[in-house]
Amino acid sequence: MSSGDSLIGIRGFLIDTPERGKLRAWSDGAIVIEDGLIAEIGDYGELSKKPRREPMRWLHSNRVAIFPGLIDLHTHLPQYPAIARSETELLPWLRRYIFPLEREFTGAKARKECAQFFAELARHGTTTAMIYTAIYEESCDAAFEAAQTSGMRAIIGKMMMDVGSYGDLAVEKILETSLTQSERLCKKWHGAENGRLDYAFSPRFALSCSREMMTATAELAKKHGAYIQTHLSENLAELAAVFEMCGWADDYVDVYEKCGLLTPHTVLGHSIHLSERERDAIARSGANVAHCPTANLFLNSGIMKLDRLLDAGIRVGLGTDVAAGPELNLWHVMRTAIESQKARSFYEKNVRVPSPADVLFLATQGAAHVLGKGAQLGSLDIGKEADLTLVDIGALLPYRKNTKVQNDLGAEDILTLCIHRGGPHATIETFVRGRSVYRAMQPELFG
Ligand SMILES: [Zn+2]
Image (cartoon, rainbow, N blue to C red; front, side, top):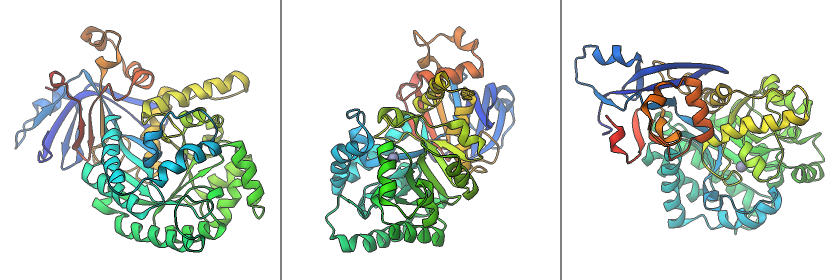
């Protein structure tokens, strides 16, 4: 598709979750995109026959499922080459695999990987990603430039660390340099491309940041109306180290609370081992959580109590947390979000296991709410930006294509197939603001 088309129609089986747990579908539906927005939505039969002033190009068929674009709320761009590298625990894994990799994330290597990374996200059906880069200003700049060129939607931040950092700066210069560079990047990129790109101040976690750094970071984010992203309560050894290092706080959440980091624009990765007081404090502050179940199992971190966080009133979305998570596949994260709560229910009473519709909501409309973009993204509604993930239903079925079987499938069947068998092999096309950012090389499926 050329990006110059102003009126495009896409035919397919439309599936979304405008509210948590509520599945909505049109079995032979269609979306008309005009100037990057969803202009019309409904039955293909009706929309295709409607008289129009200018000719419209129709794409795809009812063999394709159309979902709102998937939103990844937590991932690390420089870590992608280290996915699925040894199963250990958070702190030794960071020291052994991650810090050495991030340390080398500069220059031509970083620029090349940034461009590849956004192509990978689109291939997995992701349209929006919230991303950490390395500690270097240029690594963050390169990521923004790649996001700008790719057409993808992204919230990106330079990693901030002034305790045990892997850089070459003299210790006394790290704090000031990190704050200055982060603010410069924020001024340059926050709200760029008419809001398609945003900045997130990114203090790594309590063990890597001084109280002074976290407090100054919170002030900068407030001053610029930018996002904040950090990690919270992922691993028990991390928790013990935080208690030892931050004697001035009552618990892990209180560390961030006292520094002013808990805001409605804050996304907290993980949040597994929380007390009731901590959950209530997060809910009161309006801060949000990125649930990363594949990463939590891979690094033996634990199982987040998803129902307790939702019941406390905390907004939750999903994250791949590459490279603690072994892939960029949000369908796999949705599957693990269901299965990890099922596993929890085998040894804990009254656990509410999420439904397929519940986890789709977390990966789309729920995540859009986390970002404060619920009115622009997350569902298939007129007036929203046309961020769409298209899945070849036949690629999810045994023996691949069988039109008869596909005709017998309902919305919940297709969603369950996507959650349990979805991934890049089945992504057929991905759109951001009505622009195609990925298209599979299977021309027979376009029509
Ligand atoms: Zn992470």
